[in-house]
Image (tube, rainbow, N blue to C red; front, top):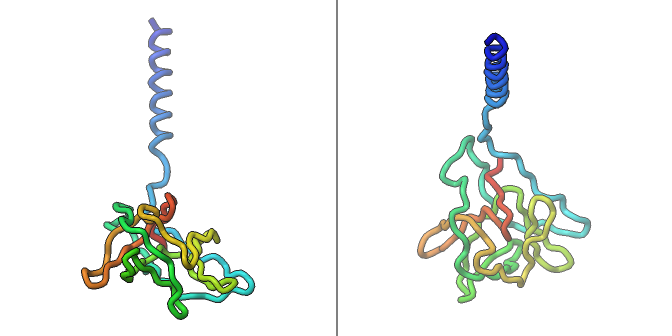
Length: 158
C-alpha cells in the first residue's frame, strides 16, 4: 500500500509541475509590430503610395482581413504617385499596410512589400481576390484597405 500511495503521489506531483510549466510564461502582447519600408535600390525614385496610419495598441476591428477584392484592378502611374483603377476605368483608392512602398525603377512604377518583394508593377493587373482587406471610402470614391497580398497577411504595424 505505501508503494501504491507513493506512485500516486509521484504522478500527482508530475501533473502539478507540468501544469505549472504550461501556465507560467508571458502574457500575449497585442502591440502592433514595427514595420519599415524596404530600402530603395540604386537608381530608384520614391513614389507616393497611400499607406495605413500607425496601428493603435491592442486588437480592434481592423485586425482581420475579412474580404477579398471582387474586381480586377490595374496599377497605374499618376505623376509621382501610384494609382489604381477598375476594369471599367473607375479610380479606386487602395490603402496599403504600413511598410509597403512604391518606387520608380527603370521607368516603371513598382509596389514593394516590406521585405523587398515587388508585389505589383505599373500596367499589371491585380486579379480579383489577390488582395484581402476591408472596404473603405464612399459610393462616390470607393476604396479598399489592403491587409493581405497574394495570400500573405500583413498584420497592423506601427
